[in-house]
Length: 157
Image (cartoon, rainbow, N blue to C red; front, side, top):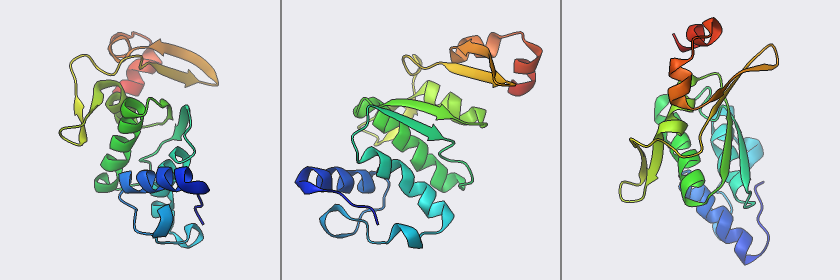
């Protein structure tokens, strides 16, 4: 079960679950037992569960991986919102280039209550590509698009 200790812990957990559209239990607890969740919903709960501890850095391992687009979009919006509104550094490990670009080019818009594309892109966002456990690229989204390395070009195509 997802637990929170004390009033502050309950409030953080309640906010995190509400952000992921999973609220409904008493005192900030979910209306379900984590052990009973199917894989896809368990995956959806992992981000608010980790955020409830007030981290400075969040490591995401392909957060929308295996989710349908209707579920993946709110999860990526949550990642962007946590980064921009709560100032939680986000480290995203993924094989899905679209998720990296989304994180690099979108910012949270409070008025829309969703992420939106911004011409400046997300500040301080960079890509690190690994091949055979070695870094072959480290730079911005724009630099990635211009890189001439054959492996990078294949990855982007």
